[in-house]
Amino acid sequence: MSDIFDFDKPDLYAVIGNPINHSKSPQIHTAFALQTGQKLEYSAIHVDLGGFAQAVSHFQGHGGKGLNVTLPFKLDGWKLSDSLTERANRAGAVNTLILADDGKIEGDNTDGVGLVNDIIDHLGLSIEQKKVLILGAGGASRGVIGPILDKKPYSLTIANRTAVKGSELGSLFLDMKSAEIHEINGGGYDNLNGKQFDLVINATAASLQGEVPPLPDDIVSPDGCCYDMMYAARPTAFMEWARQHGVNNISNGLGMLVGQAAESFNVWRGVKPEIKPVIDAIRNSM
Image 1 (cartoon, rainbow, N blue to C red):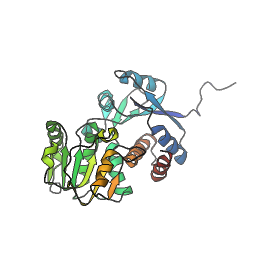
Image 2: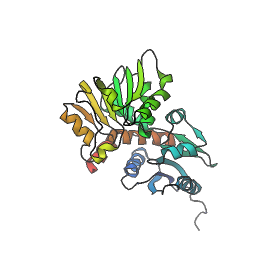
Image 3: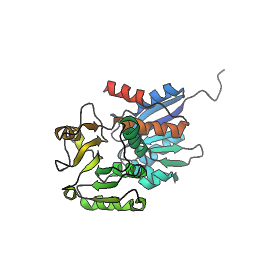
Image 4: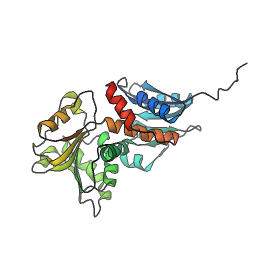
């Protein structure tokens, strides 16, 4: 006679979004689990617009321990959370939910940690006292600005097609300005003329559709870096733009993707997986 309770049952995790069939998260977290000896199952859940809260409740009700949240539900996750970590509250969006047994939900945001760690630890670049430009003023930008400012760049500029949105987003982080951070500002792409930046981060999804924001030809300083938060099997349009304009340090967002996943895994399981072997495995499978 089998036991009524299966104490050997793996813990349940998933990524939730729309669309979701492209997600590498199940592959990444399965690799982390094998690497660290954690017993869990990780799946991908497609949710119709308007059905986010119900889907989370259903998953939690069936024993789910945690969720990664991707587009377009990061703000929904922030609103649904009963409590927020400091970095999630500052970002105004979540990509990680911790589902407690008592039904409570805590929201976290690991996107910025994933980006910063990829730039510093894996690409070997510095953010400290660099002039940083972020393209786009959406949720992707908002999630990474705080962790970037924590590394004390010389300045941070946000450029957006709708100038007022760039300006408004910059103003939200003015309280982080310090003796080390000389300027935090935002505006439109027209404001970039005559300026150069050491690190240009594309936080728009436009490059996946073959589009690049209207950037001055000399926007990247000598020895500067271009980083696209998007990732694909081939170089994105933004990466191609950077190559054509003589930039040598160019990267996509695969390292950020695996890095934010590793931080989520650590939040849930209390163990930090090795990132580089998983980045290599994902890159080789693309």
